[in-house]
Image 1 (cartoon, rainbow, N blue to C red):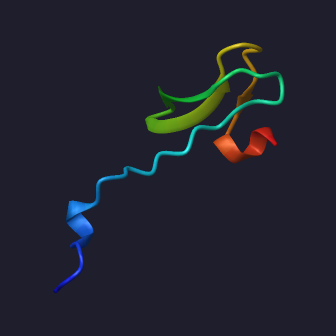
Image 2: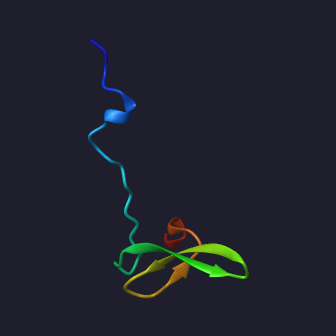
Length: 56
């Protein structure tokens, strides 16, 4: 029998990032200077970084 196709996977792999302070890291997009800029920010301590992995 054939295996399960790549489009029929049952587990969706989303990674949640956590700030060292214990808050959850979320993404935010801002339109500035004619461009979209994406930022990662912590809900608890309001720290802002360019990428979610920069919180480590």
